[in-house]
Picture 1 (cartoon, rainbow, N blue to C red):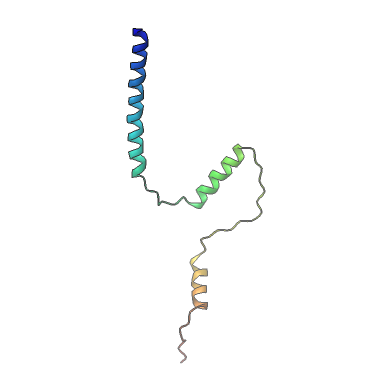
Picture 2 (tube, one colour):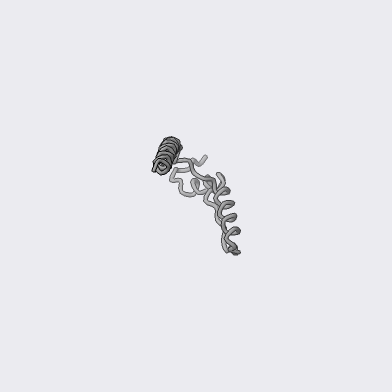
Length: 88
């Protein structure tokens, strides 16, 4: 009977250590910044690695990037600008 009680005590001690570790990890995770975005290049690399690992051979049909150069943004701004041009 004493052997069972020592096993139970060992398990209870182990569980209490695990609970302490989980609490510490939850505090660490709560401190992490959630608002940090993942760069698009990293997301593409991770997606490709997962797809390759799972054996999926995908074909690229279209590629589009959301961040355009500043020159295109400036050009659109000039087109939609309602400022009256000064004529000399």
